[in-house]
Image (cartoon, rainbow, N blue to C red):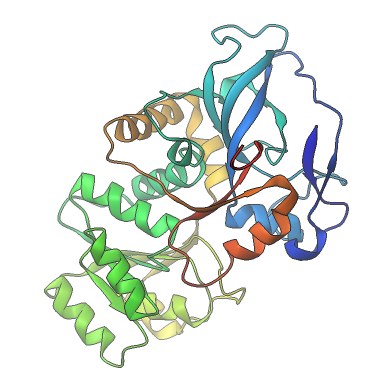
Amino acid sequence: MRAVIIEQFGEPKDVLVAGERPLPEPGPGEVRIATALAPIHNHDLAIIRGVYGYRPELPAVPGTEAVGRIDALGPEVTGFEIGQRVTVSGVQGAWAEFFVAKAGGVVPVLDSVSDETASQLLAMPLSALMLLEDLQVEAGQWIAVNAANGAVGRLVNLLARERGVHVLNLVRSPAAVESLQALGFEQALDIESPDWQQRAAELTGGAPVVRAVDQVGGRAAGDLLSLLGARGELISFGALSGQPLILDPGPIIFKQAVVKGFWGSKRAEEIGASERRRLIGELIGLAARGVLKLGVESTYPLDEAAEAAAASERPGRNAKIALSAAPLGG
């Protein structure tokens, strides 16, 4: 089968190559899935660089989430059938024509849900939903998120709106503000504007920001800390800048603020199967109703994975880049 392969860790544009790999056979409790569409996530790129929370054994096939159809059932698998359309995340090897996954993590998906949405239905949406639940905010309260025009920021907005929670969105350009407002997320600020903090107070009507989600690191985390109210919490969710958090101890001390991290993969393990099913059921319901729609900006064949990875990191992107195992246009 064709697959994307890394033989060493490094910059995705330098180490991603396409090649032939043996067709994987599902073991007990596993299914083999014929890949239809697989998104490129930031954590996929971190794994390729060797800077994520784990390193796969090399050579490795990257890719942690995909939608496709079940191609083969391993021993002891029940409740699924060949040809069934499914989505799955938290796997290894999805950037290939076929990959195997534990049957317990595979989620059937209706044909009415597009490949673009189904391929990204679990990893980022589930992380965003778990994050929102962990924040323990109530309807009418305010949270803030930076890099808000990215996938996680848009998801947090959508899910928060379903709960009546207000979101203050921080971005770095007027175009990003317009992009969010076009989606109906009106409370958006360009932090390159000199009066953005004053504007933040106006948008919230002086109400405290009780939680702030940092996806950037560096000084951007300090900007969020400055917005927090007393006893607020700053959650480190990502590090798009590649920089360590730069935080003024004054606001931490005098606001008695809490700074903590959030790792979606670990939280998914910790909450248990029953809670995961409840949250996934909520996401599937939102997708089936057309409330949760996840777009793909561009789709690349497996042979162009290096170019696709580079495209996924270009500024100004408003949707995911994805890989297709099927010949494009064919």
